Length: 191
Image (cartoon, rainbow, N blue to C red; front, side, top):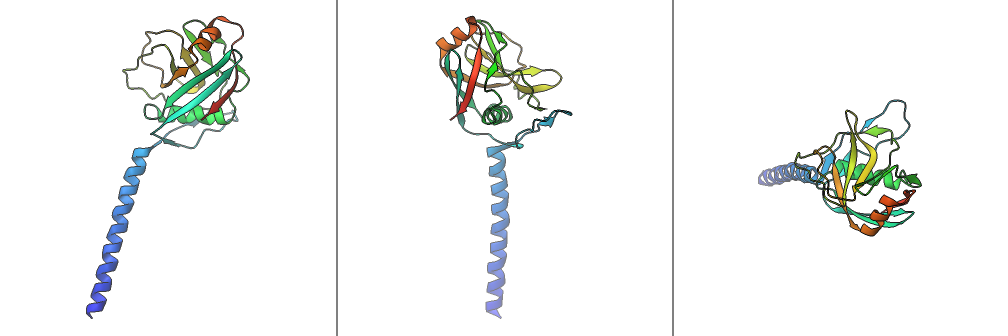
C-alpha cells in the first residue's frame, strides 16, 4: 500500500511541476513577444505579417540607394510591431526599386505604396526626432502602413510617428539623397 501512495505522490508533484512550468513559459513568452494587431485593408491583396512580434534585440538594415548605402539599426523594444512590419515588408522586397517621393535636407520619405494592411502607432508621447531618426509615417485615422521617413536634420514634431530606429552609417549618403534627383531605393537588406 505504501508503494501506491509514493507513486501517487510522485505523479502529483510531477503534475504540479508541469503546470507551474507552463505558467512560467507563458509569462516568459509574453515578455519576449508582443501580439500585434495588423488590420487588412478591404479590396487590397497584401497580407500582413504574423501577429507575434519579438520585443528584444536590434535589427541591422542596409538600404541600397542610387546614391550609396544607408545602414540602420532598428530597435524591437521600442516598437516591436512596427519593426516587425518593416522587416516583413523588406524580406518581401516591398521597398525594392521604389522612389522616395519626398526628399529635402530635412526629410527623406520612402515606401509610399500600400502593403494591404495597417496598424496602430506605438507611441509613448515623449518621442523626439533628432537627425538620423527612422520612423513610420502615420496617416490618421488609418495609422501606420508601409511608408517610412528618415530625418536629415533635427526636427520638432508632435509625438505622432512611431520611431523604429536610427541611421548608424551613411550620413553623407542621406545628405546626397536630400539634394539629388531622383532618390531611389534599389533594395533593402536585413542582417
